[in-house]
Length: 171
Image (cartoon, rainbow, N blue to C red):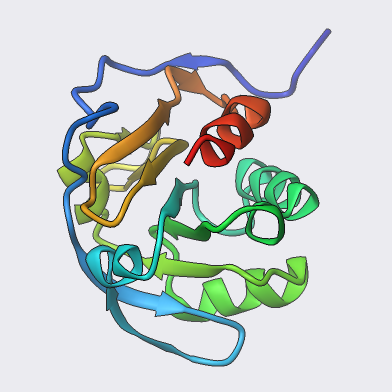
């Protein structure tokens, strides 16, 4: 079967794993109404956070990930806040949120510094100096301790949504 794109193996990552501390950060958090700076620790102080790193808005993988998460409605079934993060601007995030009818907030990180802190940078082929986070999911508790981690080993690759649901349910 011809996929129309190449599967790319991604380099090894030294990302945070279960039991380790998730790096804290502050970036604009975009909702369907506005955006303002927020930190991961502020969100986690309110309860567990499912932090979903995704490719830039408008890409097939970003659309697929958010469609899957919306259909599974983690926030409705569990006490967890789902937020995303990509290199897309707040304006692009507002468009994605509106187009996908999402109830999730999305962090905007155009310089990809958060992905660097998590060691999940994906340098884009054919785009010198442009990178984005590789697909990844981190479930963090109120102390910013990682309770679940999944990071793509190839592009494109998607999380096992049942494993994510099991991790969220185990909190």
